[in-house]
Image 1 (cartoon, helix red, strand yellow):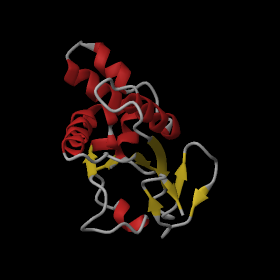
Image 2 (cartoon, helix red, strand yellow):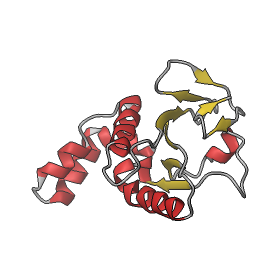
Image 3 (cartoon, helix red, strand yellow):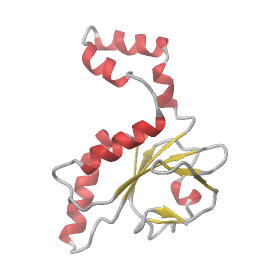
Image 4 (spheres, rainbow, N blue to C red):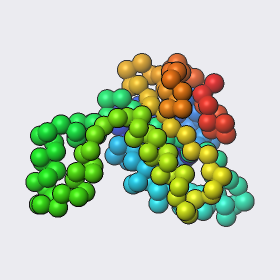
Length: 158
């Protein structure tokens, strides 16, 4: 399963050379948020288990140039504060800062710690550069060239 942003400029099937008809399920939402996708991941894990098959790995992919990064500037923060009409809790937490690799790590940790998902579910995170087409596994410091393939059983681009 791939969890990623809804941004139409790119498709993980293309940059990892995944088959379109038999490839992994792709869950896309605004910003690629794990918190917003947990229900879908749970549902897909349950469906897989009911068919005596494993969900496989989950790859969380966030990308450079994401519009969600723009929420960190002062004018965006003020717009969200105005919309919240004085309820600061959700807004301040949402706008605490933007470190893309840390956000990926946090999303990986959120999925791994979900009590309703299999304990042995492998969850890994990547950053995608929309300009170069390269991906970076957040567990390492190296970027993988565009056009690499990814085996989601091992979750490592090849």
